[in-house]
Amino acid sequence: LDENLRRLAALPLAFEPGTKWAYGMSLDVLGGVLAAINASDLQTALERHVFAPLGIRDTRFVAADTARLTTQYGDGPQGSPPLRMGDPHTVHRADGFAMTVSPGRILDPDALQSGGAGLSGTADDVMAVLDSYQTGVLLKPETISMALSNQIGDIPRVPGEAFGFIGAVSTDPVAAQAAWPAGTVAWGGGWGHNWFLDPVNRLTVLTCTNT
Image (cartoon, rainbow, N blue to C red; front, side, top):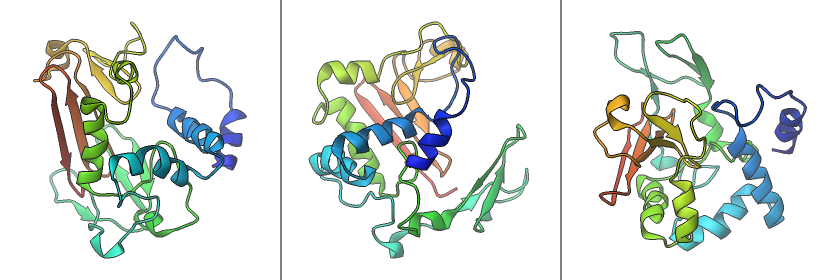
């Protein structure tokens, strides 16, 4: 983590902060900050401040029980079924973007503890974190309000969406072609999960796949 942060700090800015939005490494930096404040590694900090208060036992940077790991699949060529992942495995998206991943990383105790990725756990564990934004068992109401609010102002991301501290914020469901109300926050991950928080209807939805 320290090495990654040193490399990141040496790079020039892609643009002046506050002028554009880009998917970046901010959560990895915040993971380093959290670990430093806690005077520990990131795993220990998360266990103390998130996992223990929410009763989460299975989520770790190294798989807690390898016998319960799902088999991972990646998208196959267009029109063909998914392919069982090799290690490493390169996933090619329709827009030409390619991402190389390593399923075996979750078994490596020396792998990077990243603020933005790399945990394994159960659907119940993920749901416990998401539900905490609705129940208030972990964060103060004003913190939750900030987390679920637009934090990039009028900077365009995609039509009908802005961005908050934990995901995309729906500002215009019609423009975004979304079925949920404005104010809904949603995101997902490359390993096959998607979720949304609908604060209007107090609804939390999570889907998990292994593709």
